[in-house]
Length: 354
Image 1 (cartoon, rainbow, N blue to C red):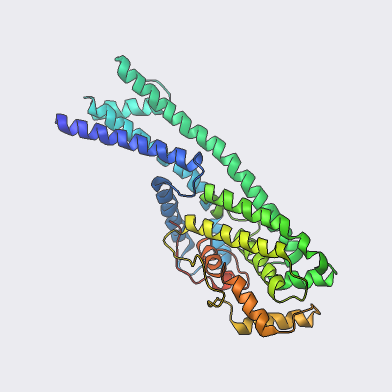
Image 2 (cartoon, rainbow, N blue to C red):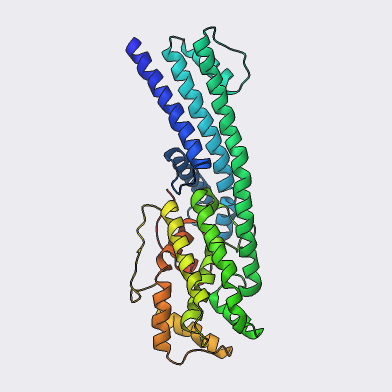
């Protein structure tokens, strides 16, 4: 019996340390890797929300059901942390010789800081204080965590909303190019790139530090950070390959910052999926040549100046798109992004968040 109590007490200590470590790594440590407890909570919550969605939902129902998924999962995560700490300390108290009932009451009293039960020995009194401190720290971490998440969310969504003015809903590179040409702004399109490059850099930093942020859905059901990213990258790819204008290094830097950001985010959200890290320019992409030609024909009909050699333009477009094609579709799938041409309309990967 003594050996069993010692084993249970040690297991309780392990639970306490693992939970506190999970909370610190989730909220404080800026590393793009979710601890096991955090990851499991989000996976389980995702499955529960999926059950509520049903087998053949419309996008409207999917968006409506998943809208509270990320916030509810975060709140649930805090309760899971507290519950594990409660069990861990109760196990430690039982291991010291207390009854099961006394251990549960003492742990609950300490964790909630109600103080209706307290030990007489100084050593165990200090243990009780540590449990109260752990509970307070976990709650305090959440209080500091949420403002950071919503600040990053606000920055992200400001740029997402701004794209509607230029690229319509759903956003597309074709619509953006035609619009800037129609308002005689094609020669100033390079003014777009610095702000969007900064957006991708911020996206990478926030969505790898706070992976749950990727599942916070846009206020408007038809908008998404994934489709916005895809539309901007496709626009830059068109500008770098198909539109007849001087070479624009800023557009190429935007493309590089964009596909690096998406790869880093995908590495956190869907680590079991494999995406090409250094694809060749000639590797196939999800866009068929016929689809590209149809889009280019529409650009030509709108009067947009195009390069003369369409075969060469297609090869250049393919060479840029291949860098982000697979990872973009994977993120569209895993975040249940709304419909957008060349993005979520072909996100056939079966990966799920881990």
